[in-house]
Image 1 (cartoon, rainbow, N blue to C red):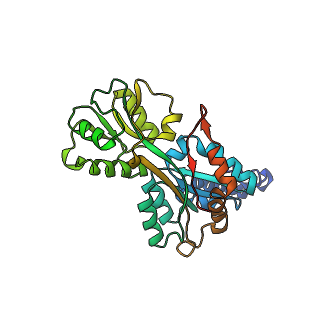
Image 2: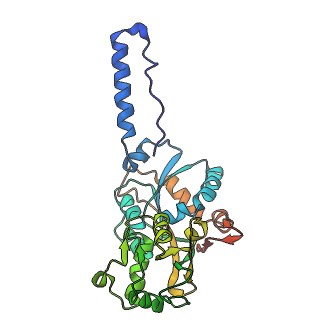
Image 3: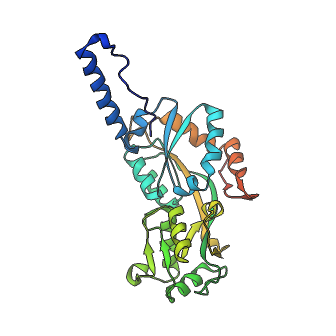
Length: 295
């Protein structure tokens, strides 16, 4: 959101009388109008030295941006205002021209975004992996390194599973994994399959409070504190690979976007400096994301 300066009408002196009151009234109307503006108009109100980035909840909630964006600002002087939503919503934000740059993790959807002309280029930035989280006692017997086998066991049990259900990159990956396991969750939904329509942190909180299973990105899991009796049940399967990409929104589609500043971020995050900053982000000595931009 754009910073809104307080408008108290001090520019209209009391000796102006009624006109001064009118000016103060208009100032109040303007302040109320600006306060109602959502992420859609945020970039239009932002200073020239700031850009809006639509990104995933995992990059925000894992704490990565708190580490990464100050380094980018120090290098360029450019502020980045983050709109953290699911990947699907982030891409739609870019499609509307309500963000200058998009940083998400659903390669197929990102390639479609480029094919539609909303960006001219998609670049790999980093990766981590997904993990299946569940009760430490693993009542479904899902523990192991085979995610397909684990999901089939879950489907055959009465154990609760929390789905993000928000068209995010994690939700898209979850649906792909169910399909690969031969389970049609759209046809077999039961009270045990719960869609929260929420971000990764809230989904993990729901799983912790109900002792349910949930698919999570490792970065958010490592930064998540309210684990209760949850633990990693499945990890290491190659199909759990989780790639992130960056795209500057195409000014040919939306001439008002801050294309030059957005491209500076896209170039910086794949540069040696940006890649080093990503590699340097750790929690408890454990690296959360692994840079893999192509030279």
